[in-house]
Length: 72
Image 1 (tube, rainbow, N blue to C red):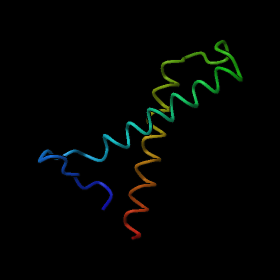
Image 2 (image 1 turned 135 degrees about the horizontal axis):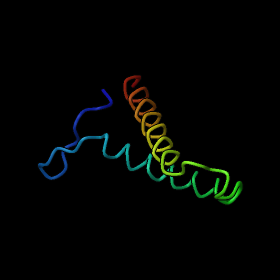
Image 3 (image 1 turned 90 degrees about the vertical axis):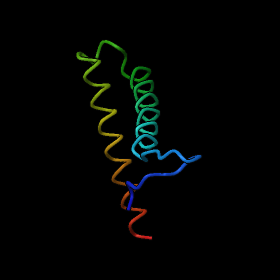
């Protein structure tokens, strides 16, 4: 199962926290790349765009890791 808790020093941590951190890093990288290539004026609702990128990356990473961990 891809969403089982991870015990760190007696404290259970959800793997979704780790997936969200990966999604945040991927969002920052892609956002920086898009601002460099396209510019800031091309994105109208910049905050909504950032949130949607974060949600898409986090969901994709969660799906990918849960699929990889189930197949082993």
